[in-house]
Length: 579
Ligand code: PEP
Ligand code: MG
Image 1 (tube, helix red, strand yellow):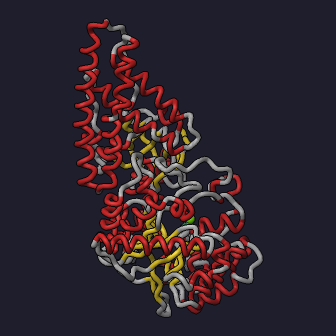
Image 2 (cartoon, helix red, strand yellow; image 1 turned 60 degrees about the vertical axis):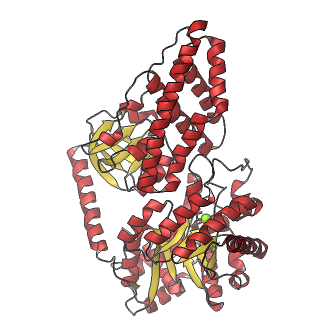
Image 3 (tube, protein in one colour; image 1 turned 135 degrees about the vertical axis):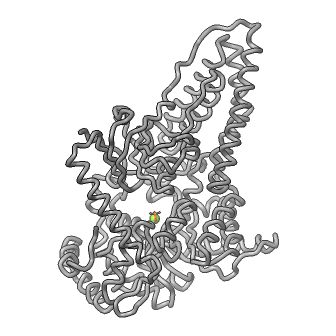
């Protein structure tokens, strides 16, 4: 048995037989001289191959739109734009006529040059766009060389898909019912493969480097998408262990699924709301299946992470509307674009900054790009006519920023009125509380909005001065740090004093121990990834509000994160589990 380690990109465990998607191997590209008289013939071959590629991509785009909505068609629209780009076509024709070499070689050289340029950029998301360039050129080359691709749509047995680099078109085209897990050499957490794997609930380990290639066709493998490791040819004991873990997880899922229709009500009858966080519209099925009572955070920036243009007002409107409609009247909170910092969007001109986490990000970026912000605000407003939508601004640090965001929203409403477009005039407006300055003046901010949502991922980062993405200081990202607990209490108290709802959509809300403390502090709503919803619901249902209040009071007297952890482990032992 061998173990290889990659990036945990989509949770879950799968045991299966490896299928190497060898079709993504590089073909050998022929290189030979052509005469002046043959040049037109070479160019004609290229034009035919480009036309065939456009047909392929159009068919894929139509399928993606049909099955997954307009925003996923954007990937292929971007491919079509590249196939039609006169600059690209001119450059290829020029180099064909200059070098007198066959067209396959010219296309290959052109691809290499573009990829080299993209790889030279420091932005990892821009680097990931090499995938799209490769997708297009490979398609043209396959047509030029009459190389038929094996389509992952034809998979007819269960497999663990092992690949060097699945392209966006592979993910859309593949027979998803047969892919039990994905193991891939390339890719990071924000790559298309990761985003789509999570949306499709397929466990995935990415970023394996060349090591993924050592998995052979037919090998039995265990893919653990929770921790990011893969066991190749597991011994009987390991297999038995994983089978047990899987059985336990399945049993737990069945037990938890009995909670789906039940309210998150404490033993003494206090109700809170448990909602889910989503990144892509396809997740709404999973949200409903896990019994969430709404969407507390739709991270709209993931619509912008698709390569190609930033999504148009229409594309955004259709994505938001689809989410709102599929939630059937349940509340949906759409957060405006939270870019910058760790979330880099390929098509937005965000320069490299010395301190990106303290820089031109989220609401700061939106307020400086009025066209982009107005497009998004109008799209959200228009979608609000189709259900219970709410809007939320990220990274608000003070009243000036908030006032500017509220004014921008008024401007967008005015434009919708002028255009005669319907929207919900009293759509609730809220803010993320994720910057300590906002937490400390929650009383002032509370007078201007309808709700708060505490974003502990960032609030902890900024309070403790600990980069949430740096594994070397990850041990300092402490939800029970006394400073964090005091800030949370303050935000809840100030929100309630002003009569507004206080929610939490940071990861902390999904920890059963923290849930008891938060309940006791009076938090009204919890929002988390769909898979965590049943656990937290079970936790809320297993304690009384009175007890949670006592636990919270005592937690606030603790002098360290560790002391609070130990206290909670003892106090909740046997009733609240973190498994
Ligand atoms: C947070 O900061 O807690 C949050 C929910 O926002 P994100 O993780 O998207 O930054
Ligand atoms: Mg945040």
